[in-house]
Structures are given as C-alpha cells and as structure tokens.
Image 1 (cartoon, rainbow, N blue to C red):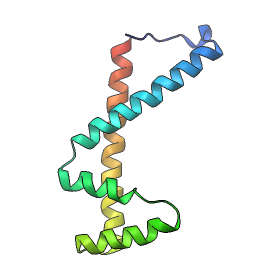
Image 2: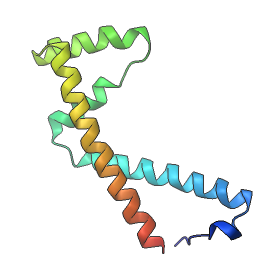
Image 3: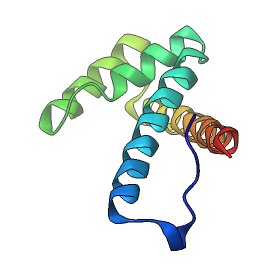
Image 4: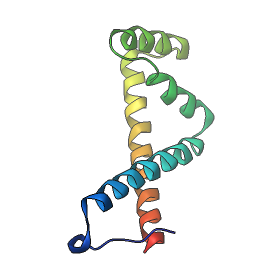
Length: 101
C-alpha cells in the first residue's frame, strides 16, 4: 500500500514515482471503465481510436458506414462515450488516492 508524501517533504524522485503511479492508476482505471461499458460502446470507442494520422479519417468513415450512421453521429457518440470514460476514470483514480491515505 502506498502513502502520500507531503509536498514540503517531496524529493524529485518522489515526484517521478508519483507520476508513474498516476499513469499506472489511470491505465488500470481506464481498463476497468472500458470493461463496464456496454459491449457495442466498448467496441465502437476502441475502433474509433484505432488508427492515427491520415488513416484515421478513412477508418472512421468505414466505421460509420459499418454502423449505418453518419461520421458526424459517430463523432458525437464517441464524444459522449469519452466523457463517460473520463468521469469514470477520474472517480476511480480519486478513490485509489483516497484508499492510499
């Protein structure tokens, strides 16, 4: 179990450790939050972010076509899911931080 380091007592190494712990917590929480999404939303958001750069435009067009929705609707749905995930991850990380105290 970790512990909180008061800011006045923190060393640079403590900050690096804390940052690493934050990233690990966020990753664990994201995985957990994704697992709690309905299957269709989970698959859609994972597919939505699958490609990068120029390939993502074509990929998202194909994803929208496969789902029988417009690209604008796909974008709106992805934004809503992303907002739910952000809220879920934030709450999960805050709970982990409280549990460490």
